[in-house]
Image 1 (cartoon, helix red, strand yellow):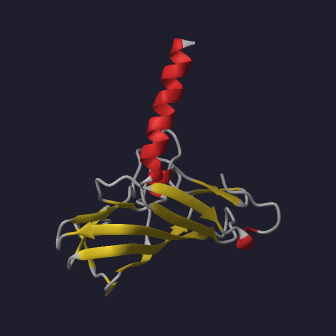
Image 2 (spheres, one colour):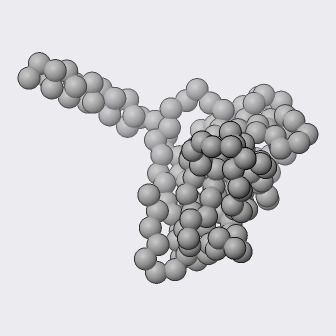
Image 3 (cartoon, helix red, strand yellow):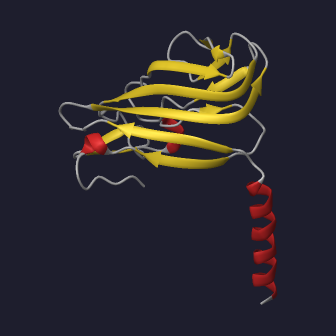
Amino acid sequence: MRNTAAALAAMTACSAWGADAPLARILITPSAMSETGGGSVDVAEVFPDMSAEPHAPLLSIDYFAPGLTMPQRMENLTVTDDRGPVAVSPTKTDFSSSWTADRKVAGTLTIRYRLPVVNDTHATGGPQGSPRIDGNGISSVGEMLLMQPVTERPYRLSLRWDLAAMGPGARGV
């Protein structure tokens, strides 16, 4: 009973702390998927109350996992804040996994991008973590699907799926 009371107290403290954190919103919109024809996933992320200095780390995403023969591609990356478009620069020339802002970032940070999905034949064993088409669905680990802003600030997350293009019965988990 004593352990239960301690666990409830810890959950209450964490819930109170989390209630004060700003709410970030993420929308994941996959296209129709086909193992032979491929597909894509559009992602829109909105983080309020963000700030970053010019040329400081701003965004990151994993693009490669052990066993893959090619890195995950990304298309149409756009970033905006309260002042408008934010030009971002990759930290590496080939398949960067992180970007810096070319100017100071302040306010609501909106990130949009597309991940083309094609199944990669693994060169070695290991878990499949990159975005992958399974039948007419898709699976992925979060760090290869979602862009992560570089911040020390805690956020609550709202995750929505727009599965209209995947057809009736599609589910996001």
